[in-house]
Image (cartoon, rainbow, N blue to C red; front, side, top):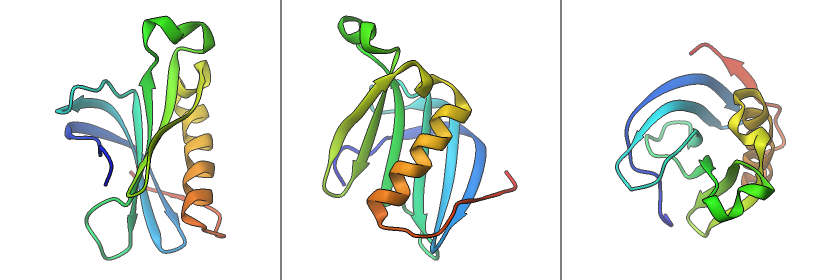
Length: 118
């Protein structure tokens, strides 16, 4: 995987089931990789323990904050790319909606995400 987040501690905010995947939305993240994360949505295939896709909300670098306070970055086996920049990615609900859409699209899932208990 390309530059996966190193998560020392995090608080689960929401959990979802999407087809054959479980997705956990994490907040209050303490990172061990030098990145600051506002939120991370991790997609894990059912029956496995390691995520195959992360969608991350990270503070924008100071020089890029005019475009938005947060960057939306996707990390998978094939990529680690910033997909968008905006203020909405710092909001739990705004991030969750977009991260679920991105994740289901990248993974080719047709199922609708179902929120489960945290």
